[in-house]
Image 1 (cartoon, rainbow, N blue to C red):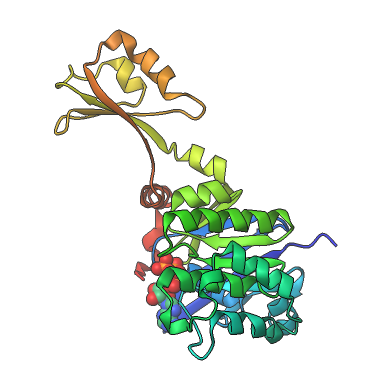
Image 2: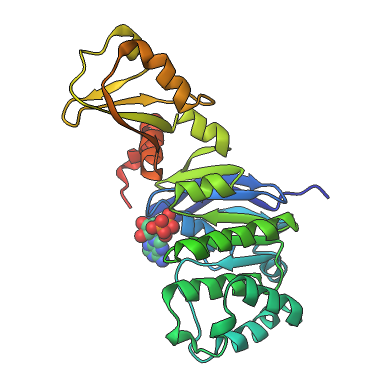
Length: 314
Ligand SMILES: Nc1ncnc2c1ncn2[C@@H]1O[C@H](COP(=O)(O)OP(=O)(O)OP(=O)(O)O)[C@@H](O)[C@H]1O
């Protein structure tokens, strides 16, 4: 069968009369790594909670590998592994005990070899006998990732898995997620780091005030937002921008004596510098900047305009 891994259709959810997810439809193909991004309060976790079946939508439906997540709750629960954003742990168990019993919740037998892989790859080995309340925030998150994967789900949902995780572990965590994906698991993730979404996701959806404002291939989205800029720090104020610099989209900030130019997709920064040679700019230093997630959101919400629709502020 050629069904979607996750098919969300016309989902709507309000809290106390305030819509937090509005008419959301999106489709994730088997084998994809898909990023769901958006500013704080955009409705990402609510959407994930509805998909996981822990929050009930007001309208719309969710299908996981072709099965309705309410009509076939037990089956879709087994097909899905969710790492929620809030840290939920059970203080009665050590990591080892919790992982041993957890797959039973999904009606799946414990697989000691797979458990060992998760323990090793998520760096949990030295902490197996620790009780949950003694774990650091980053360790709790890694444990939650292991728990989400223990029953070998076909769809893995990670809601900000790298919050509070240090750089090295973040890198190894994403490497592991990539590996699991290569072995066939579909991944839906949220992150507050644009670089992570860029490195991991083939497609990205952006939510704002519960509404889908972009859903594109990551490369198309970033190219459309012309993310990269070359920043030139100058010795002194240049002459007013001439037509050539204006045509390149240069912006001058006299306060800091910096000239900022967008770097077109596919062009190397050195090519742009060559193009500027004739201007004899007194360049002191140069940097290449990529738009951050906040800038992306700002730009997109500016493009779509209607983000304050209905006067709703989360
Ligand atoms: N159980 C709840 N009761 C009332 N309001 C809620 C509840 N859960 C979420 N909300 C509200 O719904 C809106 C969307 O929240 P949600 O957590 O889905 O956003 P998010 O995009 O995941 O944000 P963040 O990036 O901060 O995690 C927010 O205004 C939040 O306060």
